[in-house]
Length: 528
Image 1 (cartoon, helix red, strand yellow):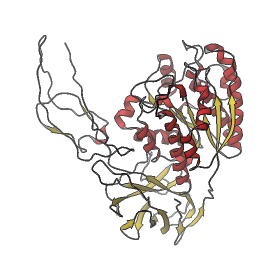
Image 2: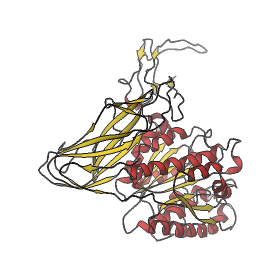
Image 3: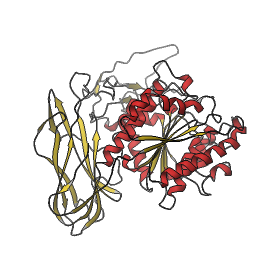
């Protein structure tokens, strides 16, 4: 689905020349730095996977070199071999980036991240710094001195930040490959104090698992993407499968309960700006631990498909406006609606949302609309659609003056058919006296967009009925106080305190069209 933008009056535009760029897949068959052996077989399994073959039919992917690890022993003795392996990997990733190709890396254990991002950072050093979103159950921020196990797969973050063994931290060049404020970690729940102390002292933004559960992975991923993009030329994704809940990724060597819901993560990928994605790395797949359904193998394939199909959609939806003089300017765009729509739990079809974004520098304005499938027709709706992009200044244009740039989307009609090409116009108003330069249009698809799932947390009991609706529990960021305190209990005594909770009717299906559960947590605080 390509967005074509045509200036109908005023303004000049330059359409990005974005052909289907080849994705270069590099493999690193390493496993000696992990707790369990077996990750070294992951690349071979992925390459031969029928699920991945299906993905290759949908995206333009070509395999490059597969690097075999250098064996110098296990645990701390693996340091020499890991260093040599990472140097080879850094050489390959640097070459891919310098050739301006899309980069996709498959590990291997997570120690390969030292090679992956050292090569990427070194290649892009003349242009600027890179950001990184690190999806993992673990911080991976030990150094050889702080680690009790000596497993180097628990050390890549520290070395990318410039700490630890100099032979590893100085691969490519002598500078740190990441700056702390350009790194975000999502899903962290299994870590040690030395790692936490280092990262929090440096100011790395850590989205612990409880924050992801409370806010939702979509909110966290959007904020992370904003943070790693604001001071960089782009960002990478490093995905450790153990970041996901074991029900989605059983084939890992260091499993940890209460992980990220993989379906929700994939759904959230559709809502972030992947046009700034430099490279993706997927690691810690341990094939011999996979279940009979090959769940982890399927997850790897699904992640690749959704990341790069979404990026292609967004890249083909980007159009640049060289200048925008004062006044009103109309831009036409068109794209095809989906042929199929997943049903909700009530048997009706879920909404499909779209967002048009106009950005200049760090600021942006957005307009959203959704289409509602009804039998064979699709109905347009623009109400109750809220911006999803996390921004320091949403809907505010600071350079020419507050609120002097506006964006409105107009449709040619209100009812469409599935698969039909939708024609629309974007009205951009420049109310400032200045000529604005270097603006960019992007169209985002927000598949099956619904109002957020309600999550409730009750801090204390109440004997009074209460209604926990959207207005009382916005974004679920704060617990809801229910009133009764100082409830006295004697030894071996129990009391029942009735409360009534009315759940919101605004429930929505998950990515796989199953009903998302409304969860209620009641915390009781006891003092003696």
